[in-house]
Image 1 (spheres, helix red, strand yellow):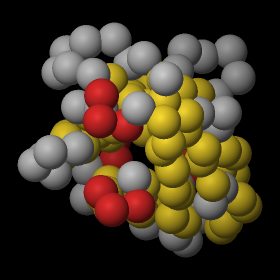
Image 2 (cartoon, one colour):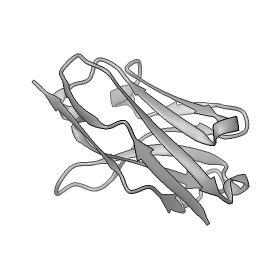
Image 3 (cartoon, one colour):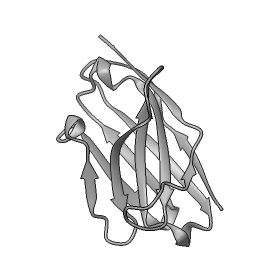
Image 4 (spheres, one colour):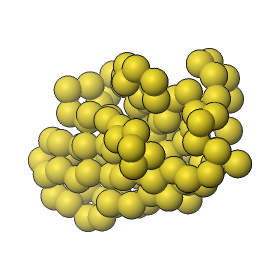
Length: 119
C-alpha cells in the first residue's frame, strides 16, 4: 500500500502561481511514476503531468506545457507541481497518483486538493 497526501491548493488570481505537494508513505519502493491529475464537476479525471521516480524524466499534457513543472524529492518521498501563469480553466481538484510500471494502471490516489483560479 502507498498513502498519498496532497497539499498546497487554494484560491489565486489569473496569472498567479501555486505549488502543490504530494507526500508519499508506505511501500514507496513500488513506485515507478508519480503523476498529477485534475477533475472538474461533471468531467472525467484528466492527466496533467508525471515524473519517473528513478530518473526524473517528465511528461506533460499540452495545455500546461511551459506553465507547470513537476519535480520530486526522493529523500522526502514528495512530488511537487509548480503551477505558474494560472488560468481560470486550470480550476479543478488536483490529485496525485502512483503507478508501479510504465503504461500500467494508476494504483494509488490521494484525496485531492482544490485549486481555484479567479478571473
